[in-house]
Length: 476
Image (cartoon, rainbow, N blue to C red; front, top):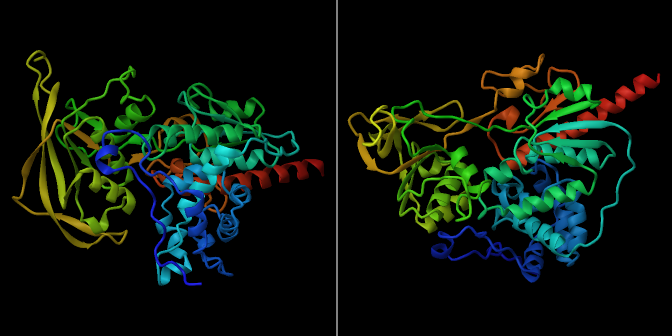
């Protein structure tokens, strides 16, 4: 039978409608479309797609189950490797990972692995009414710091091995960047809640409003009987450009802007958190976070939203799908432009501080691409005398984040790199402190959800081996 050359399209909301609401953009496959898409899989013996998956999901096996309409069987296969399938199916960059390795992709479009994973997870969440089979408890306690993707993955893997796991979350809701960073229209929060509840069924305890390094220290966790600690506290410290005008009113870090909109639901009339509903918004940066901020600003009522990025579209680091969605919704891309100053005026009613003013514009300079940098991307070179002003009421800085220094400053013996990330042994996630492991953005700085999950998985395996070895040595 001939193979369909193109993957089945994902149904989506109309761009004009979705640009003014926070409902999920992608609507998901139907069962019949999922089966048809699964039928495109060649079921390769060497399974190259699995090699491209950071958590090593048995992709051909789960797709075979979908092809047979055994959707629950497909879910069981995925859940052996992934604790967050409904999340991964939505936000994982499959196009550069599993799908980039797909043999079918050599000649045609690759199998839509991510869309099938999302379908399977959503089908399970909507239809499965049973309880998971719980493992026998081994009596060992592990603390997990942070309930983002790396922490939840580590907690899930350990709980399934019989460990008593407690997750400590600084915010009032579990999910980390999944709830405060990724917008509702890309990842509905009820999806994250269901994934967390699924882990709780395995015995994972989640304690919110606990700031490790403030409420409790890592050393105090050991004093409370935890035998190992995993640090997955993310990278919540925003970076700024260091240009004039960043202290003006109307300048946000993308972290603050998205947290107010997502976690605090500032888009709702009932929300009590303030946020600027600007008419003209400029977002500085070109990653997924920049796309999220720009598309959120549109939904908050902005009439004009532009991305200011210093390289070209070819170097844009955001997912292709997110860029396409942003363009469809009307986001303007000002490429090969670099901000040099944010402009504003003082509030006439408050003349005490000349910086206590409001944004009126952003001065940018044109760029050209020069020689490649250390990462292989062509370096932007500013064109002298090409500055001009873009009128704007709000500027959102989305140029990256760094790990919060609180844990490193309160944990003796924990080695930290020059960029603030915790130093670990790559193959295990082991830190310089005995019994402490780390992974995700707390180590690498801001990266993808799936890479954070892979790090959590690696650390869970290493923690299991570490604690099993300790018991063996103690027994001797």
